[in-house]
Image 1 (cartoon, rainbow, N blue to C red):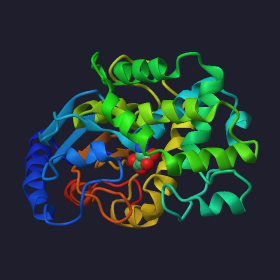
Image 2: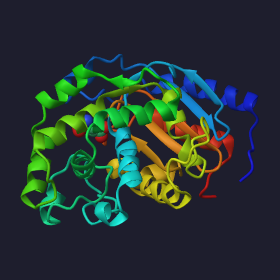
Image 3: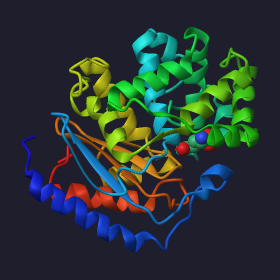
Image 4: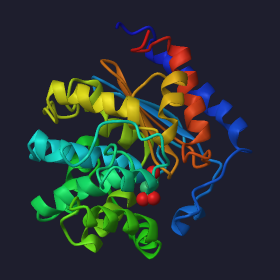
Length: 313
Ligand code: GLU
């Protein structure tokens, strides 16, 4: 796929998408089931792209940090794939879309405590359990990985968000205890939850997030330092999972509208990958009923249409 858009045209497009985003500011609402997240100003929008040569372009509130929430599930999976044998991971978590809400418990009981994929909460809890059991300081390891990938040395956790999630842990704790009962969570449940909530509480901005995902557009190589993060095969596998499972139970609709591998978080961020070209991050806190950013999804649709570039044709 050759680039169809030069950087000046792309910049104009990013700015137009930012202006258009304000039209979505009367729809949806911020995630308030985590009280610390409810405090964010809902009417913000940022967009950033990181090209495979490492250069970035951005518009709107792209330098405002926000809670990355479930976007961290991708980085947790990457840590697991870097450290564990394939069987150790994929016997404990599946690779199929769930068709259920991100925090649903129903399917888990029917399917004997094996979550459908690593990007729903139950799946991320299993990945966290695997990591907690193998890596001494998983929180530091994750933070270092994010700092390295994004080139920002001061990325960290928002302790208030992590605590707020722990104070309202009932549903995630239920998922973890159910999986423990099925023998699919081994570590102490509160340790797993604390680590998982810290991963979700990481604060980054659109530019940093786009940079931290550029390796998935670049055959597994981080353009910032030229280091191989995952193999080319693993890159394709992660992108396949993002395309089929990255947007909760709206993954099919997102693939239909946007046609890119992506991952959303209830903080209002969405990352998307245009293989061979760029990684993209959009952020706007108002969410639809699936927990996905409304203005973010609209902007990604507009970006793909405006660039005329899609891996799906
Ligand atoms: N920390 C959130 C939770 O566990 C993550 C949800 C999300 O972003 O999908 O509910």
